[in-house]
Length: 436
Length: 175
Image (cartoon, rainbow over all chains, first blue to last red; front, side, top):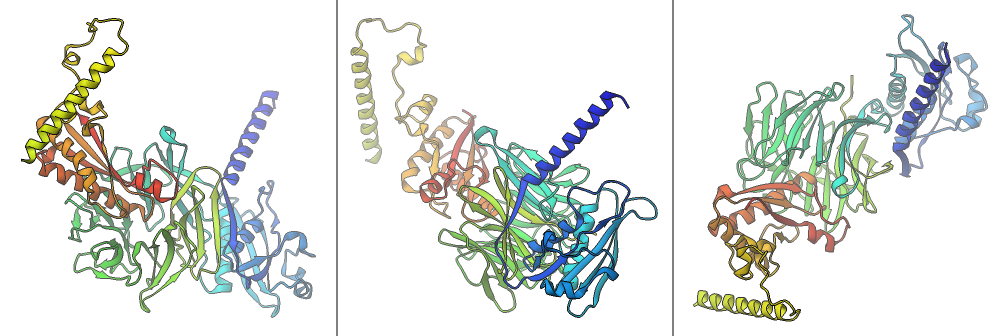
């Protein structure tokens, strides 16, 4: 190997490190109000049994981080672990009981028999009953080790809470950086823990309203790049995109039907904003509301039977719903002066909204059956709620001083966390569906 | 009656302006020459600020035509009485200059949701467009574009700033 080769290698390594550091620096997550009854759990470092060097961030650290952010778990620091067993025989339950741990996870990472990717082999035990609650092998492709760790966290979360985890999902959001003529907007997709941010599209003109396709492969969004609002649909991995709607007036608020065959959107070509449904295969678009008021922000119920939307037909913005084929809209939210931008829970029973009262805007959840609001966030300018695909948390946009940041709140309001981008405004979060 | 009063007022303003012009000219005195380099339009004196067919009034701070932003109340799209004069001036200009084209950019403050605010910005733009049409501008002369809360002129979360952002900007794409 020549000197030049070595230098090249060093430069490459240095660049790789810089990229990783930049990605890590970008989003910082902090729990601002925790849950005192979080479950104590120990995720013992996974033994690295592969030929190559282990990654900088260990698998067990990623799992602990996921569980911690859910607010339901209190993972033990590795430094406090008296023992670090890899196999069941090495687990001395008495020791872990003394350390006041309720659950323990042990595991290893190895190369699968075909030599491709990674296998995460792990077990979950109840320290008190000594029951083995999980014993699994999770296999992921090359470069997907973080994704594998999130899948393990999903399984642990499900085994202990009864609800599937949503850690192996992704989030989309919009950033605005710079001032005046240097303003730059970016639509970004990142892992649900904020890692691996990847720009989907950048523009000097505003971007907003990202919406995932149900298979998690595409994102529809609104861009002002042509001087007026227009809806584009873009493939997240290939970057290829198509213009969906760019006529006169507003082209906004795209939302996919649960089967991905249709898209609800807001168009104002008739003179004021109305809800429309577009057939994705034929492009045929049908107007389903007809009122002089502002009708916008359509979103589908998970069973596809209704489209929820914001309308000020009663004087102030409230949530209504209408069948996707059209019909008589029925009012859903019955309390408050200002309820807008609904996100429907995966079970279809609740809707999260931005609720305004005077100059205070908070995220509130309306229970459709009991007809009651629960206010989840303290305000003051909270908006754009987006349910996690397992319904456990709601991601939303808020302001801190004069900049926008993203926050997440557990669906019961008990745990809140903040995701901070190091620079500029972060807004318009959209939680992806579960990626299969 | 009303128009007679208007005419008198316009004349008065014009006369006052003319008077101002002469005194201003007189003050720095030394050269009596009437500056031959200036184009002939200028020699006819300053434009009548109430002549809304005169494009020179776009840059005349005395004229309503130089004012091109209309402000609104929270969650409202009614053009307040104090802004009707501005809208009328631009309607008069558009009516007398059929080739002129206007984009009415509607905006909202940051409170409330982004897509709803897109609707609100459009509603404000439509309110101005409707008033202009009622006063003789052709519908094809103006286009409404809503930016919602995406393009604030001021970025502080308080009413003084919000009131600056709730606006319609009258932008001429062709005069």
